Every structure is written in structure tokens, then in C-alpha cells.
Length: 386
Image (cartoon, rainbow, N blue to C red; front, side, top):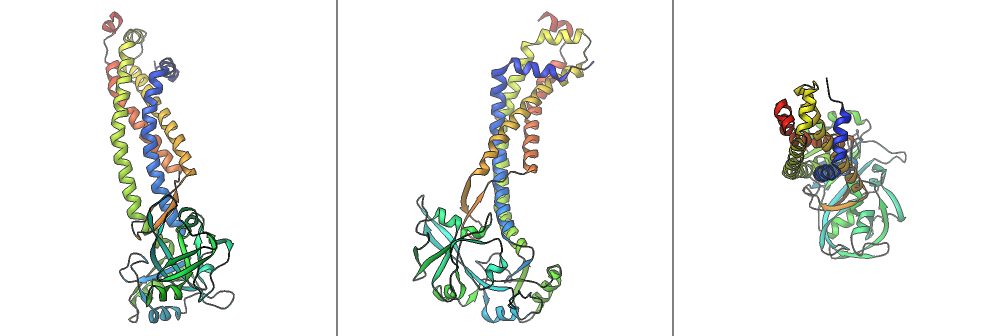
């Protein structure tokens, strides 16, 4: 005979206080575990969604980011002559020569932080349809005007519409605010590339962004451009470029989260062991009765292990429930690759939910297996005499 699951549920309900405390400890561990995974997922999502698979970006050979890259005007002009580059409806090439530099600005909450300033070309907006102007207008070519991302406007001081920023020995007027959704562009300031190059005394662009006539032929184009003796560049799809930027930081966050969760889980497992051992000791005669009624040792083992697994499962659900509310918050940190400010939100996925529940069940199993074995090994006569 096998003891029904309802037996385990009733016993947990009878010990409401100890059940709640043990499940609460597991819930806290799952909350930490899920929140860190959501943090890493949110970072990856922000950077991956920044790039489009239809766009290609060219950097200096060996450069990991636009901040490290430099493409002189002559090489940028050569790239624009390739027949693979698409042409827009207005007859202009869908190609933008861009610059990326860092400045330091005060944040509204206090302190200073690096901010990415992107020099754009006339076709930059056409290549990034996710960017929507909320108020104002785009900067005029050849002017000292800038537009700021929505998250920049929320986090930094003095970047509102109509304000002026002072950097690179020049004043720049904010003429618009744009929203790029959950992408890195929302954490940038945009202005005319040529004007920014003059102000920062740069003689080279950071990157060349363009769309191919046939994006499926990217690999053929990449081999062609990287073998061209006139160029010292590398090409990659824009979404791949931004995905690579998230790898180091996301990996660091996951390792940190898993390490902390393992440390905290030891306390939760010990709590579960104590709870289940106490349950075995207080129900010794009950265990003897079950054995006398014909229930096998395996059934006793399963019944007590099921209680511990149910504790872990309930704690996992509770921890995951509270962690899901973190999606309402946006956090700001430094991008390890570009050292600029990056804002992003927590992101909960089905994969993270499954991992969190699995982690809680592992804690429940680890906390209940020894007490369950003890219960299953009890002698019938000794248990009835207790």
C-alpha cells in the first residue's frame, strides 16, 4: 500500500507555524536566486534588443566596442562605395558613420556617472526604427544640438528639453527627447557626428552602420570587406555585436547569484532538516502504526520526503511570486564593456521560473531525505512503544 499525498498535506497544515517558517526561509533563497537571474536576463535583453539582425556594423579590427574603435574618413568612404549597401526609398544609402564618446554628468540622486554620447548621421534614425521622438525635434546637421534618451532624462540632471550641457569645450542645447524602448539607446545622448568629432578633436569615426541589400548574404560580405587590403576593419551583425557586450557582465551576475544562493540555501536546508526531524520524533508512534497497518518502508520514506518537497515547492512559488514584482523596477549600472551608464529592467522568463522551482525542490529534497530515511528505518515494535 502507498500513503496518499493528502496525508503529507494534512501534516503540513497541522504544523502551520513551523511549515510557514521553513517555507519562508526557502522563499527568501529562491527570491535571491530568481532576482539575480532576472537581473542578468534583463541586461542581456536590453543589449540584444538594441541591435537589429538586418543591420551590420563595422569596427576597427580587434576592437571590442565602439569606444575602442576608430575608422578614418577614407576607410569610411570606401565602405560606402560597396554595392552591397542598401538604398532607401529616397535614393540615399542606408549607411551612417557614427562616433561614440563618453562624458561625465551629475545624476539626480547624487554622484557622477559616465554617459555615452553618440554622433549620428542623416540615416541613423532610418536604420533604427525602434527610436521614437517623444518631444521636440532631432538635431539639425552642422549644429550644436543634441537629443537625449528617455532614461537619460530621468536619471541625469540638467538634460531636460531646452537645457544646455557643457562638454568638449562647447555648449550643447537639448532640442528633443527620444524613447528607444528597452534598448541601450535610451541611455545615450545623440548629436551630429561631424560636430562632435570637431568638439572632441577626433579625426576618425567609431563605427559605420549600414543595411545590406540582402541581409542573408552577410557572411559573404564580411569575408569580402575583411580581406580588402585598403581596410583594417571587422564586420558583424548589429544584434551579435550588442549580444557580445552583455556576455561578461551577465556571466558575472549569474556566477554571483548562484554562489550567494548556494550559501543561503545551506541555512534553508538545515532549517528543513530540523523541521522534518522534529516531525519524525513527534510522530514516532504514528509511524509504528502505519507500519503495523501494512505500509511498506518505501511508503513511509515517500510520505516524509513528499512533505519536504512540498515545503520546498511552496517556498519556491512564494519566492518567485515576490521576485516577479521586480519587473516593475528599472536599475542603472555601468556597462563593463563601454564603462557608460546603462539602465535596464529585471526580466522574468519561463526558463528562470523553472530553474527557481527546480532549485527549491532540490532544497526540499536535501532537507528531507535524511529524516525520511530515519522514519522509514524505524522498527515497528520500538516505534509503537515510544
